Length: 170
Image (cartoon, rainbow, N blue to C red; front, side, top):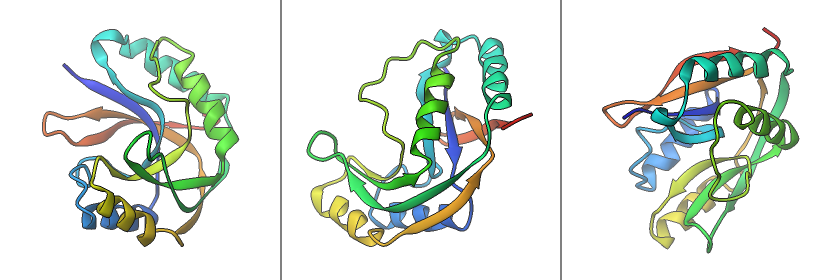
C-alpha cells in the first residue's frame, strides 16, 4: 500500500537547520520526513484516484498566487499531542485556504485535529527532548516566498519524497 501527502517544502538553508535540530533531539523521523508545512496529511492511495487528485492539484495551484511565509519561534501542542513545532507567523491564511482547497477535491480525508499550519521539529519524544527542541529553535526565523506545493509519496524505505510539483499560476 502506498501513502501520499501534500505539503509546502521549506527551502534551504532553513530546511537544513530544522533537520539538524530534529536529528539532534533524537526524533526518529528526522531523516525520513523533510521539513514542510502540511496541506494534506498522510493519506492511503487505495482511497484516492491519483489521476483525479493530480488534476485537482493542478487546478488548485493554477488558481493560487505566491505568498511570503515567515516562520518565527516555536510552539507546542502539548499536553494534547507530544509535538513541538516552528510557528508560521505569516502565511497562515494562505495555508488554511490551500489546505481547504486541496482537501476539497477527490480526497475525502478526515483530520484528527483542526488544521494549524506549522513545521514539526519533534514528535512523540520524551518531555526533555521536546523541551530541548522548543528551546533550540525559540529564536528561529525564516522568511521566504512560497510559489507552489509538492505531492509526496512515502517510499518503501519509509522516506517521504516529493514526486510532483504544482507551481502557482501555472
